[in-house]
Length: 269
Image 1: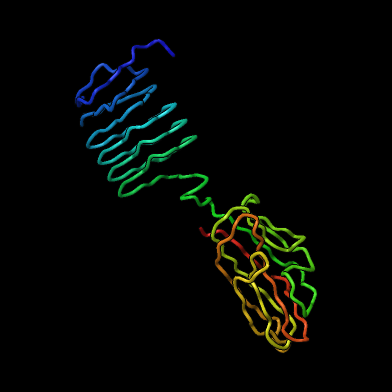
Image 2: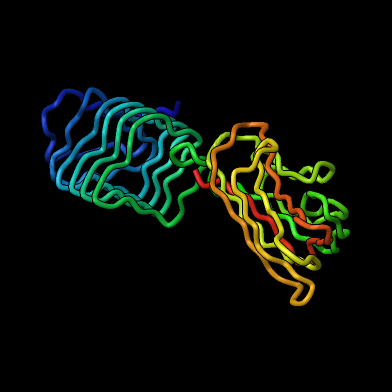
């Protein structure tokens, strides 16, 4: 470390006026309580215990290799930048907790609590155990399926266009014509199918592991086709479950999914 004379504050006595502060380093330990008077700190700031102050705790920048334990408590807790290699434990509590940027290589434990918590940018891998952005996958037919009277997967006879947000969450298996779930959760499927052919009802299924989670029987008829029909479902799925949408003519007539048919799956919880 550089040569300097650090200022060490300890104990719980309020320090309302502090003068001749060194600008190179300040060490605050053992639950120091700062009084209402302003405290301006530049340079290295290391916090190893609680820090509280009223009516506010604020700074243009609070930077530290590590902030461990302790709390920031006041009418307002604000900063242009709050950053740290690691933040462990403790909490930010007040009528408002705000910052232009709150960033950390790792945030463990603790909480941000207040009437409002706001930031210009907030990024993270998960919120309440849910990935952000929410995982989704999508297919779209760019060619017509071959007409059939048997039960068929949408896209069974061609190669749909597919869009996948993250293959570690949901992937599209074009050989099996189904979506593969890689993370357990609650999912929603919406299929918008354009049918051509038929003379009676078409049976549609949203399937999980080969069993229907929703079934619909819309009508399709050659006198009015092509027609658009929709089926949707919300259900829980485990990792490795497969999900697909199928259709089947319920008479000797044949039917097929047409160009523009789409299926979307997304995790909602």
